[in-house]
Length: 269
Image (cartoon, rainbow, N blue to C red):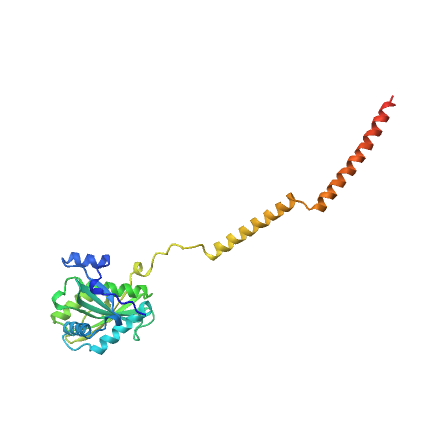
Protein backbone atom coordinates (compact mmCIF):
# COMPACT_ATOMS: atom_id res chain seq x y z
CA UNK A 1 0.00 0.00 0.00
CA UNK A 2 1.16 3.52 -0.76
CA UNK A 3 1.11 6.00 2.11
CA UNK A 4 -0.52 9.20 0.88
CA UNK A 5 0.70 12.43 2.46
CA UNK A 6 -0.34 15.89 1.33
CA UNK A 7 2.85 17.64 0.15
CA UNK A 8 1.00 20.94 0.04
CA UNK A 9 0.71 20.97 3.84
CA UNK A 10 4.13 19.45 4.59
CA UNK A 11 6.31 22.19 6.05
CA UNK A 12 9.54 20.18 6.16
CA UNK A 13 12.34 21.17 3.80
CA UNK A 14 15.91 20.02 3.43
CA UNK A 15 18.71 22.36 4.41
CA UNK A 16 20.04 22.83 0.88
CA UNK A 17 16.60 23.58 -0.54
CA UNK A 18 15.87 26.06 2.25
CA UNK A 19 19.25 27.69 1.67
CA UNK A 20 18.58 28.20 -2.02
CA UNK A 21 15.19 29.76 -1.28
CA UNK A 22 16.52 32.04 1.47
CA UNK A 23 19.36 33.29 -0.71
CA UNK A 24 16.88 34.09 -3.47
CA UNK A 25 14.62 35.95 -1.06
CA UNK A 26 11.71 33.54 -1.45
CA UNK A 27 9.94 30.95 0.67
CA UNK A 28 11.54 27.47 0.89
CA UNK A 29 10.76 24.79 -1.69
CA UNK A 30 9.46 21.33 -0.75
CA UNK A 31 10.29 18.57 -3.25
CA UNK A 32 8.52 15.19 -3.08
CA UNK A 33 8.21 12.14 -5.31
CA UNK A 34 4.77 11.93 -6.90
CA UNK A 35 2.68 8.76 -6.51
CA UNK A 36 -0.76 7.51 -7.48
CA UNK A 37 -2.04 9.31 -4.38
CA UNK A 38 -1.52 12.57 -6.30
CA UNK A 39 -3.73 11.49 -9.18
CA UNK A 40 -6.82 13.64 -9.44
CA UNK A 41 -8.25 15.18 -12.58
CA UNK A 42 -7.56 18.73 -11.40
CA UNK A 43 -4.00 18.14 -10.16
CA UNK A 44 -2.99 16.12 -13.24
CA UNK A 45 -4.20 18.96 -15.48
CA UNK A 46 -2.22 21.40 -13.34
CA UNK A 47 0.97 19.35 -13.86
CA UNK A 48 0.35 19.10 -17.61
CA UNK A 49 -0.23 22.82 -17.89
CA UNK A 50 2.94 23.65 -15.96
CA UNK A 51 5.14 21.36 -18.08
CA UNK A 52 3.65 22.35 -21.44
CA UNK A 53 3.86 26.08 -20.63
CA UNK A 54 7.49 25.72 -19.57
CA UNK A 55 8.36 23.89 -22.82
CA UNK A 56 6.23 26.15 -24.99
CA UNK A 57 4.54 23.22 -26.71
CA UNK A 58 2.59 20.02 -26.01
CA UNK A 59 5.25 18.01 -24.15
CA UNK A 60 3.09 15.66 -22.04
CA UNK A 61 -0.50 14.44 -21.92
CA UNK A 62 -2.67 13.67 -18.90
CA UNK A 63 -2.18 9.92 -19.42
CA UNK A 64 1.59 10.42 -19.52
CA UNK A 65 1.50 12.32 -16.22
CA UNK A 66 -0.65 9.65 -14.58
CA UNK A 67 1.77 6.91 -15.65
CA UNK A 68 4.73 8.88 -14.29
CA UNK A 69 3.00 9.41 -10.95
CA UNK A 70 2.15 5.70 -10.61
CA UNK A 71 5.82 4.81 -11.04
CA UNK A 72 6.54 6.46 -7.69
CA UNK A 73 4.45 3.83 -5.88
CA UNK A 74 7.47 1.48 -5.92
CA UNK A 75 9.32 3.74 -3.48
CA UNK A 76 13.11 3.26 -3.37
CA UNK A 77 12.81 0.41 -5.90
CA UNK A 78 11.27 2.68 -8.56
CA UNK A 79 13.29 3.24 -11.72
CA UNK A 80 11.74 6.46 -13.00
CA UNK A 81 9.81 8.93 -10.83
CA UNK A 82 8.34 12.39 -11.12
CA UNK A 83 9.59 14.95 -8.57
CA UNK A 84 7.09 17.66 -7.62
CA UNK A 85 8.14 21.05 -6.19
CA UNK A 86 5.84 23.06 -3.93
CA UNK A 87 6.20 26.53 -2.50
CA UNK A 88 3.73 27.53 0.18
CA UNK A 89 1.40 24.74 -0.94
CA UNK A 90 1.44 25.66 -4.63
CA UNK A 91 2.91 23.49 -7.39
CA UNK A 92 5.79 25.45 -8.92
CA UNK A 93 7.85 22.85 -10.77
CA UNK A 94 8.66 19.24 -11.55
CA UNK A 95 11.28 17.01 -13.11
CA UNK A 96 11.89 13.31 -13.65
CA UNK A 97 14.78 11.11 -12.55
CA UNK A 98 15.61 7.64 -13.85
CA UNK A 99 18.05 5.26 -12.19
CA UNK A 100 18.68 3.15 -15.29
CA UNK A 101 17.42 4.53 -18.63
CA UNK A 102 17.68 2.18 -21.63
CA UNK A 103 20.13 4.47 -23.46
CA UNK A 104 22.92 4.64 -20.84
CA UNK A 105 25.28 2.05 -19.43
CA UNK A 106 24.86 0.63 -15.94
CA UNK A 107 25.55 3.17 -13.20
CA UNK A 108 24.66 6.23 -15.27
CA UNK A 109 21.34 7.76 -14.21
CA UNK A 110 19.34 10.50 -15.86
CA UNK A 111 17.16 13.46 -15.02
CA UNK A 112 15.03 15.52 -17.36
CA UNK A 113 11.63 17.08 -18.01
CA UNK A 114 12.81 19.96 -15.80
CA UNK A 115 9.89 22.40 -15.74
CA UNK A 116 9.38 25.50 -13.60
CA UNK A 117 6.44 27.87 -13.50
CA UNK A 118 7.59 30.86 -15.62
CA UNK A 119 6.39 33.21 -12.86
CA UNK A 120 8.95 31.82 -10.37
CA UNK A 121 11.90 30.95 -12.62
CA UNK A 122 15.19 32.13 -11.19
CA UNK A 123 14.05 31.82 -7.56
CA UNK A 124 15.69 28.50 -6.64
CA UNK A 125 12.95 26.08 -7.73
CA UNK A 126 15.05 24.45 -10.46
CA UNK A 127 18.02 24.12 -8.11
CA UNK A 128 15.84 22.38 -5.52
CA UNK A 129 14.49 19.94 -8.12
CA UNK A 130 17.94 19.11 -9.49
CA UNK A 131 19.31 18.62 -5.97
CA UNK A 132 16.49 16.20 -5.13
CA UNK A 133 16.88 14.27 -8.39
CA UNK A 134 20.66 13.93 -8.07
CA UNK A 135 20.41 12.93 -4.41
CA UNK A 136 17.99 10.16 -5.36
CA UNK A 137 20.30 8.90 -8.12
CA UNK A 138 23.26 8.95 -5.73
CA UNK A 139 21.27 6.95 -3.17
CA UNK A 140 20.50 4.44 -5.94
CA UNK A 141 24.25 3.85 -6.47
CA UNK A 142 24.56 5.80 -9.70
CA UNK A 143 28.05 7.19 -10.31
CA UNK A 144 27.21 9.51 -13.22
CA UNK A 145 24.26 11.47 -14.62
CA UNK A 146 23.30 12.25 -18.20
CA UNK A 147 21.02 14.98 -19.54
CA UNK A 148 20.10 16.06 -23.06
CA UNK A 149 18.78 19.30 -24.51
CA UNK A 150 18.48 21.18 -27.78
CA UNK A 151 20.64 24.22 -28.37
CA UNK A 152 20.21 26.91 -31.01
CA UNK A 153 23.05 29.46 -31.32
CA UNK A 154 21.87 33.01 -30.80
CA UNK A 155 18.61 32.01 -29.14
CA UNK A 156 18.33 33.65 -25.72
CA UNK A 157 16.56 30.68 -24.11
CA UNK A 158 19.11 28.20 -25.50
CA UNK A 159 22.01 30.35 -24.35
CA UNK A 160 20.51 30.43 -20.87
CA UNK A 161 20.18 26.64 -20.80
CA UNK A 162 23.78 26.26 -21.97
CA UNK A 163 25.04 28.54 -19.20
CA UNK A 164 22.99 26.75 -16.56
CA UNK A 165 23.47 23.09 -17.58
CA UNK A 166 27.10 23.25 -18.66
CA UNK A 167 28.02 26.04 -16.27
CA UNK A 168 26.30 26.02 -12.90
CA UNK A 169 25.24 22.35 -12.97
CA UNK A 170 28.69 21.17 -14.08
CA UNK A 171 27.72 18.98 -17.06
CA UNK A 172 30.16 18.41 -19.91
CA UNK A 173 29.02 17.79 -23.49
CA UNK A 174 30.69 14.92 -25.31
CA UNK A 175 30.84 16.92 -28.57
CA UNK A 176 32.58 19.89 -26.99
CA UNK A 177 31.50 23.55 -27.24
CA UNK A 178 28.64 24.46 -29.60
CA UNK A 179 29.67 24.60 -33.26
CA UNK A 180 27.97 26.02 -36.32
CA UNK A 181 24.85 28.08 -36.71
CA UNK A 182 22.28 25.28 -36.58
CA UNK A 183 20.23 23.68 -33.87
CA UNK A 184 22.04 20.76 -32.25
CA UNK A 185 21.18 18.04 -29.77
CA UNK A 186 23.62 18.18 -26.86
CA UNK A 187 24.24 15.10 -24.72
CA UNK A 188 26.00 15.99 -21.44
CA UNK A 189 27.30 14.07 -18.44
CA UNK A 190 28.88 14.61 -15.06
CA UNK A 191 30.16 12.44 -12.25
CA UNK A 192 28.18 12.36 -9.00
CA UNK A 193 30.37 13.84 -6.22
CA UNK A 194 31.91 11.21 -3.98
CA UNK A 195 30.46 12.80 -0.84
CA UNK A 196 26.95 12.16 -2.20
CA UNK A 197 27.70 8.54 -3.12
CA UNK A 198 29.47 7.54 0.11
CA UNK A 199 27.12 7.47 3.10
CA UNK A 200 28.40 7.41 6.71
CA UNK A 201 28.14 3.93 8.29
CA UNK A 202 25.21 3.38 10.61
CA UNK A 203 25.84 2.65 14.27
CA UNK A 204 25.51 -1.03 15.09
CA UNK A 205 22.20 -1.78 16.76
CA UNK A 206 23.47 -5.08 18.20
CA UNK A 207 26.57 -7.23 18.37
CA UNK A 208 27.75 -8.87 15.18
CA UNK A 209 27.33 -12.66 14.68
CA UNK A 210 31.05 -13.10 15.40
CA UNK A 211 30.73 -11.17 18.65
CA UNK A 212 27.70 -13.25 19.58
CA UNK A 213 29.57 -16.50 18.87
CA UNK A 214 32.56 -15.34 20.93
CA UNK A 215 30.30 -14.40 23.79
CA UNK A 216 28.60 -17.79 23.59
CA UNK A 217 31.94 -19.63 23.65
CA UNK A 218 33.06 -17.57 26.65
CA UNK A 219 29.87 -18.34 28.53
CA UNK A 220 30.18 -22.08 27.72
CA UNK A 221 33.77 -22.18 28.97
CA UNK A 222 32.75 -20.40 32.14
CA UNK A 223 29.96 -22.91 32.76
CA UNK A 224 32.34 -25.83 32.21
CA UNK A 225 34.85 -24.35 34.65
CA UNK A 226 32.14 -23.90 37.26
CA UNK A 227 31.01 -27.51 36.82
CA UNK A 228 34.59 -28.80 37.13
CA UNK A 229 35.25 -26.73 40.23
CA UNK A 230 31.99 -27.87 41.76
CA UNK A 231 32.91 -31.52 41.13
CA UNK A 232 36.25 -31.07 42.90
CA UNK A 233 34.73 -29.25 45.86
CA UNK A 234 31.91 -31.74 46.27
CA UNK A 235 33.30 -35.33 45.86
CA UNK A 236 30.96 -38.30 45.65
CA UNK A 237 30.02 -40.45 48.69
CA UNK A 238 32.12 -43.38 47.40
CA UNK A 239 35.19 -41.18 47.13
CA UNK A 240 34.62 -39.83 50.64
CA UNK A 241 34.49 -43.38 52.07
CA UNK A 242 37.65 -44.43 50.24
CA UNK A 243 39.54 -41.39 51.50
CA UNK A 244 38.35 -42.04 55.09
CA UNK A 245 39.45 -45.70 55.01
CA UNK A 246 42.84 -44.77 53.60
CA UNK A 247 43.39 -42.20 56.32
CA UNK A 248 42.47 -44.70 59.02
CA UNK A 249 44.89 -47.33 57.63
CA UNK A 250 47.74 -44.83 57.46
CA UNK A 251 46.99 -43.69 61.00
CA UNK A 252 47.18 -47.26 62.38
CA UNK A 253 50.43 -47.97 60.53
CA UNK A 254 52.01 -44.79 61.81
CA UNK A 255 50.94 -45.66 65.37
CA UNK A 256 52.61 -49.09 65.25
CA UNK A 257 55.78 -47.64 63.82
CA UNK A 258 55.93 -44.97 66.51
CA UNK A 259 55.57 -47.56 69.31
CA UNK A 260 58.44 -49.73 67.98
CA UNK A 261 60.77 -46.80 67.69
CA UNK A 262 60.19 -45.70 71.30
CA UNK A 263 60.95 -49.24 72.70
CA UNK A 264 64.22 -49.51 70.78
CA UNK A 265 65.22 -46.13 72.11
CA UNK A 266 65.03 -47.39 75.73
CA UNK A 267 67.77 -50.03 75.12
CA UNK A 268 70.03 -47.82 72.99
CA UNK A 269 73.48 -47.48 74.69
